Length: 150
Image (cartoon, rainbow, N blue to C red; front, side, top):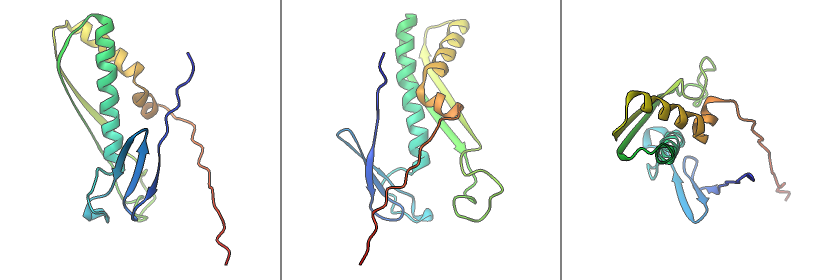
């Protein structure tokens, strides 16, 4: 199967707000006032957690169908703690990202414990966001700069 390419692009609206376009959708990423924003959207790390929950949802329903399981209801909570000191330039002691991410996966489904464990293994194995968060992903960060000569 050929690779699928996903992309977003956008522009800074303020020092804390970025508006991205993903296909025909507009995503406003902003910080709460305590972090210098206007609270017009979720912040970047909240979007990361939401994208993880969204991916788990898609893969959970896909794999449940494959296993012949019917998901009657599914709630997912994802949370993580991070120390903002590095982000704010106050310390290099801890990493900038999450120390740990915890998922509470609460399905309403008729399945044995063995089926549930197998299902969870498939979800974690096949969720692209889980893979990106669990493994090092090569990143290319390229500066495109047009000189503003006067």
